[in-house]
Length: 413
Ligand SMILES: Cc1cc2nc3c(=O)[nH]c(=O)nc-3n(C[C@H](O)[C@H](O)[C@H](O)COP(=O)(O)OP(=O)(O)OC[C@H]3O[C@@H](n4cnc5c(N)ncnc54)[C@H](O)[C@@H]3O)c2cc1C
Image 1: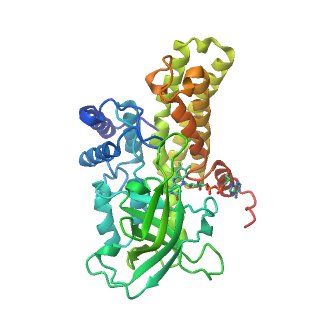
Image 2: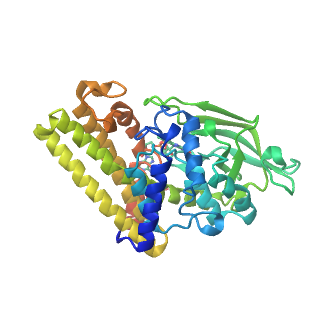
Image 3: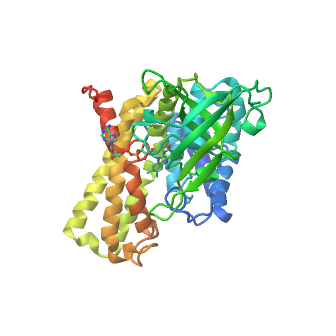
């Protein structure tokens, strides 16, 4: 992929740069490197306020086609946006799962009525979404979900159950438990993978993909405190929760295909923005090492060099995956290379950052020797354990690569 900008792309870059410069102010100023997953240091109303600011500027749904209210940006423009964002003074993004996961899923698999009902409120950030996939006994083995949904034809499927005008009756009644549901406590809706046919011949069949309103008596959300201090994710209990019959994406018992479609978005382009900020994170660690004299230590120097080489490898890999995506329209299994690589690279960098910070790094907020970019040493170090787990653990990525890219024998099922 060439990142030589056409005149239109250069104009786009200038527009992004100017907009960010003009809008990172007021409550959004001075938050560079803060916010997003892992901590609660930025109040949630500021997190959402910034997403709405981006929405007002037309920056939410950048990759969505214009016919669905998106910006229809090319891949190059998306890369440009993420690079400009990383270089700006803006805070870390809230993982906006409506924008990055459910929206593209509805565009690919939803009915026109579902698209009309849900997409505009995702774009305006009026409704927040969470992902109801994992359960105590279903993580990597997602097909093992046990949360049950049964159709109650007597339910009126009205507004209380998230039904639209003209809902033709019937409601799904849901019982079970999800876990690790990020931002569940703040979300208005959840896309839930659940079992609708327990007698299906294989566990991948008999699964459906439901859109469930979160604010109802049948749902209890219990935040889990992470070791990095934040309460990003939750346990979510469904106890006779309801959603209108029409709030199913894809076929009844055909939800596995839809659920995998969502994961393709999760493992694909949506992690790109995150990685483009890493050059700056690396620079912060390097500056800290130089400032406190540890850059003269042979072992630290070697690790810094290793990180730098990793950064370049990551960049080339990304360009390769993006080129393939630009040519074929989908990142495919090769996007697992990116996930596997960046998650391990970033974990190594935060370990190195702790080594450089020394004893002071073990205090929240960092030591006096650290630059502002590594002031979140301890938080980042603790949170980075999560990178190799969510959105498919490293072992699962290796399986995907082995089977989908290298053509190795499939894992016994
Ligand atoms: C920060 C964070 C946020 C998250 N947010 C959400 C969310 O919003 N919604 C949601 O639904 N989930 C979320 N998750 C959950 C995440 O998707 C799961 O943690 C993940 O799928 C792994 O599942 P598990 O934790 O049950 O581990 P398990 O699947 O039990 O895996 C345990 C270990 O076994 C390994 N393993 C499992 N199967 C295989 C195999 N076939 N071959 C080789 N090794 C294997 C794994 O790699 C891992 O090391 C989040 C997780 C984290 C850390």
